Image: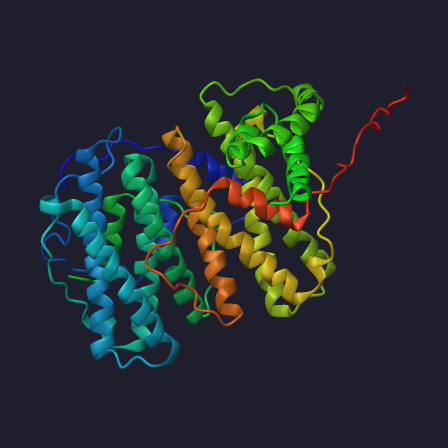
Length: 217
Length: 236
């Protein structure tokens, strides 16, 4: 994973305290991911899913740091694009679930195209993923889609303070839509569409760990 | 904007704008002659409100820039307004159960956002204006229409503001609120039968657009309730 992430902005921690005082459920980053977690047991991972090198978000915004962060975002958008395409092809999805997969899939593809174009020659090459039963079984697809959308929101939010203003201006238009996806699929699953007053950020190791728990390879 | 609407906006600014920063933001959006009118009206009220806030101890949080303070103050008033809207809807209880359930959750979030932004502002926080929701909180359709407008525009506003904030810590904090506002919008859209996410990219909207929405609702009462003493009367 390269150099360890130095501590990024932590105003969110103070915010958590404020929100907790209001009596609203706010989870710390670790607890947030644990609560979102799918089964943790028996996971074997062969090789690093994210081989993008250094973790993002170590220091003050710069073009070089933008590249690292946006490449990680591109990795997630590629992953979700393929996830939805695979589920639409093989998941036997119908009704609103199918509509969601189509709309969200189109959005993720647009996000990936946008990021690839913005990164130009620095963009990562597209890799293929294996989703196992997550894209073949409707009952597994819905919670997996919900978790992937939550992870995307957390990934973008975790980097908001680390991007240059130009990159932030682009990323915030995307995370907004990921939040909508997260709310939509949660509503379909009869879960809370907006379960917290604040969506905490997560760093790259937290996101990759969650992907490993989902057994996406 | 009509002259009446601008006077209404001026009233809002008089009540929430403590150091003139917001006045400049809004005034910049208006044509020059109207800008002058607005400045004249706002100027008359600024001193009184400034004194009121000053009494609460307006010690500057040294790390917060003037621009960040102005943005956060605007957001604080917006969150006061939204929290008030949902809290009143919940108290009256006249909406459909589905809408009420939504309003209950969203209201708790907006109240939490008020506390969060107050925390970021510290001693620079402004007090809540008083509101008159004009019956919107007890009739289903106007309530939903209003709620959707505010949720959608808040998400757009926070995008516009994010790239204008100076502090990385404040950007990171506001980002965690931003995605929740877009969840609210998606959620209520689904409840009323609209597609929750229609475009791949959500666009920003400038602060003046939100100022106009607030002005158009007439939700901010012209005369704030005075909790301590009555406003001194002109006796000359």
